[in-house]
Image 1 (cartoon, rainbow, N blue to C red):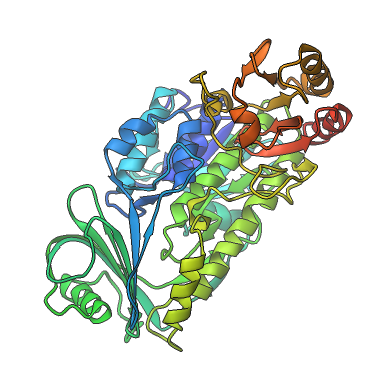
Image 2 (image 1 turned 90 degrees about the vertical axis):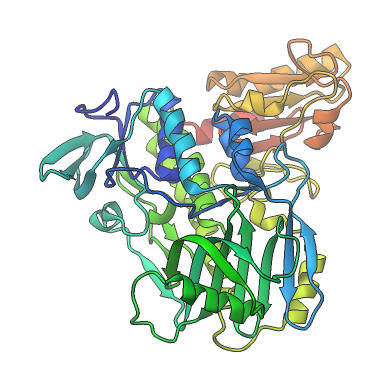
Length: 523
């Protein structure tokens, strides 16, 4: 039980998977009274969502999690080898630049949940288990939620706000009538197992692999315990067949796709059959109830994006909901949550539907796919390029490609000689203004930038950090590392959101425009 148990919280989070836990952490670390309930008596075991992309690692860092320990518990994702029928394999490095976490991590979801649960407990909130939300009724100022306990008892919670993070089968979503647009992918299935293996499967076993042949697709990934994840997308001869597959069925599918007849599995576990579909809620918010993660969108688990997208939901929602709960912003701020996050889910669903190959229908042009991968830098799936340029929170002037303009992620930068990471400043979880004078070595230029940035920002309680060569009354950037990374060599004003995205960008003398933007979005 949490310290808030048996009280009416400001926010009730329903669901204690990674998304619900991240939402609760973002609320609790900002002083919001939150309760977290989950229908399971114990945390769910298994590796499930085992790929943690670079931006998710950044998010965990910004949330204050011990990412170093977490990295030490997993396997570094170093390369992806693509095997196309009739073509040479294509080996691509997974590392990306411009982040303190250049490589993705392979780690079981249960370990991720354990990390998040322990961190949440350190904030004074413990997950209340064995409680299932069965009814949700909204009033003008509170939401009444009935929770059914495993012993048959019923508990009533009256919360200011409710976040549904239960997964695809969401009573919160159904109770508030948010809609659920579901598109099945008939004729195919995904068969999965974690197992040790022997045989002549080609390629470096330390790499992740993707095989595409006429029989379907096959992915493999090394896991921390020495096993490998195998997941095969193949034709589904009997859609009425229910239940998880046995080892023999998965092995047969893997052999057919890979063409490796001598492959054997040992110590297999977590066998899983998935009938594939994409689904996105019609809306992410109805009144005082909001949806996140798989309750808001469930996408085919073929690009390892589901959990990562849900964590991004939580990171986007947490600071906004906290600001509304604490009276620092109007409820209109929450409109930006759906405006930013729902298009991401729709685009991901469309991409999965377009690119998945499961042995049904016309065979893809493998040579064309290979050539496109050769041209692609491969950063799209990492989360590092995600941006919100069309958000109602984004304004100001655009910049050259590759530089963070309105709606873009701010990269982590360590100014030369200072040892101070920009993420350590942003990790405090509040709005920040970075003011770059036109001349970083001129005190008068620095004073002007501070004056331009100060009026509107300080009136809204947003701290201003003037970036100069010496750090006088601000941040030191002696070699211009930060200025270069943010494209601010000629001076700039950047309003950075609590989640590390640019809300406004202007020239060093655009203080009036910054003032208007701050007043508009924080009113």
